[in-house]
Length: 205
Image 1 (cartoon, rainbow, N blue to C red):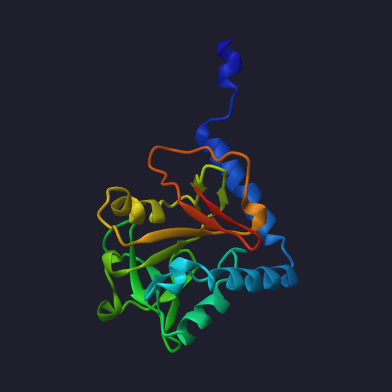
Image 2 (cartoon, rainbow, N blue to C red):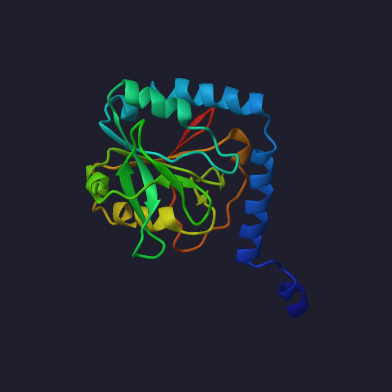
C-alpha cells in the first residue's frame, strides 16, 4: 500500500505535467486558428457589460501561444479606454506593477523574454483604479480554478481582491478553448477567477 502511494504523482508533478501539455496544445495552433480566435475574442469582449462600462483595463501582451489580445487593445484605444500592462516589480520579488500602455509606449523584454513597457513611475496606476484585469492562464476547469505559468504573479496581484480590498476590480481570465481541462490540481495560494472567456464561450463561476 505504501509503495503504491509513493508511486502516485505529487500535486506539483501533476501541475507541471498539465502545464506542459496545455502549453503544447496552444503553441500548435496555426496562424489562421490564432487569427480566428483573436477575432472571436474581440467580438465577445466588446459586447461584455463589464467592458462597456470600463474606463481603465489591465491586460497582457500575447506570449507563448496565448490568445491574442492585440485587436482588443486597439479597439480600447479607439474607444478612449485606458489600457494598462503588467510590469515585473523591480524591487518586490514576484509582484506586478501596472502601467499605462499607449501606441507610442516603449516596450522592452523582461527576464522571461516577455515584452513589457519600460518602467515610468508616472504611468503606474494602483489596482484600486482599475475596472478590469484580464489575466492570462495556462489551463482552467469547470470550477474556475486557474493554472498559471508557475510564477504566482497574478495570484499575488489578486490577493488584495480576494480580501475585499478592491471592490471595483473585476478579474476575467482569457484562454483558448483547448485550455479548458477536466480538473486543475490547485494549491492553497491559487485564486479562482469568477469569469473566463474563450473564443467560443463565456464561463461564469
